[in-house]
Length: 346
Length: 271
Image 1: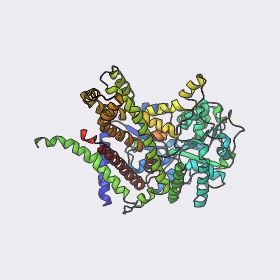
Image 2: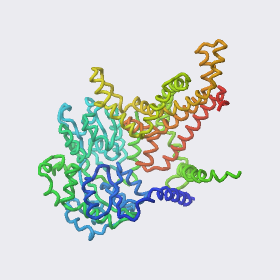
Image 3: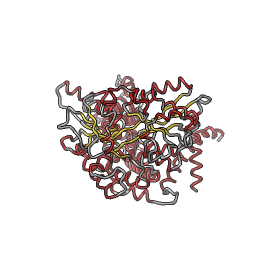
Image 4: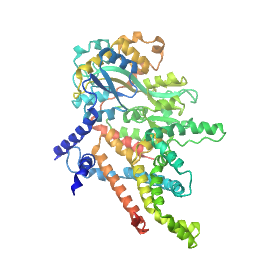
């Protein structure tokens, strides 16, 4: 019975997608499923000029929504997920093993980002950028410099706080404040964290994703939970903004390039990944985005002033108090459930 | 009989894009992740937490529909008066914003309503107090009224324009004052337009998820957002499909109530 429905679904999808893909055949192309604004457009143009392969970028806004798209529809050649989501995709058998002989520039990748827990043999994942999650705040409007997640629960900032609207990032603040791991598998700890978020709700101006950058640049709020690279980008535009990795600890992440099993243009995908690993390209990208590159050789090419900026390059001490996300397995549903409760509660 | 094949393309279209998707929704709604029959999605939807989302969505949509009716009826009435000269200009002004994508228009409201946005800059310039309504109920309702108002005006206008003006004249000849003419002749004859106006505003208002997510800032979820979440982030298509079916039932039910009221007024006979 279930099969029939899947056949129907496939027919439906096939017919709708054939309408879309009828145009633009016979041309070398590559479909890159990337976060919004997460690559320097000049870099893409350079790749197309050099190889004749045109790159179509499709944006996603959370790892979770990306996963569902990839699992249910194919067609992407290169994807840029974060660590814990790579773990889930590998476990679900969605990813193609990379042919490292076609990615010689992989040698430039920093050893710190090789052999990570989700890809111990470096078979699936080519690191791209890394960063942390912290608080970006307007230094002209806070009562004292902020160094703790507790600032997000400070009633003096009522209506001036932006939270990040994706489940793992939102749960990081309360879990760390309570001294728990961001990868907790304990229902009691999770409920405590969710209760804190519900308590915080009257103080929150909005739960946003990507648009929070514009809001902070425009002075629409005093503080926001943000990724370090985005914080760097905001600081380029508004120098009153300061980024901090709270003392209770936080999340460190590394995003990287993977190729799904369903990719139609695998050869082009390898070429693209190799291109992005060239030190000069990685440096360009990193300077444009404000994210720290995972490419060791690129560091020498980056503007030294930027390298000294604490947002751009977190200290060892800061990194030491951060932990990677790990895939939660079935406990994911519990995270989703409490997160819905937070958003729905009045 | 001979011309039956003309409807062929539409039947194919309907099968592909209405019947099959509806079947799939039904299938997911009544199964769990392993494909076994279950009603779990429905019982979960009636837990207090999710029920409050549904009720809140109906409340917000009903308020927006009521405001659209209050604003839209007089405009439609003026537009339908034969002596009104600025008709084509006014119609043009209604149509122009609709040439633009509604997502874009909703985005613009965001920059208008922001704390340091266009509206507040203007108020500050005039030395008036600021208003901060972005990310509240009011902003969501404003967005809905703004986007859906034309769907209220046009059907009411059509109904009013169809009224035989000699009926109004006879009422006047028989000594009815303007208020009575409106109450006893114009209003009852325009009920079909009002009914389709309410339908056409309430339906998109109760299902929208873009307006609350842009103007409500994710602060509170409406049913549309809840469904979107189940499909896009929580990956619980079964629950999402169950919610969608419930929403469809709510819409059908509310339409039945509205049509019932319509019949009682005997306006329906004019359609």
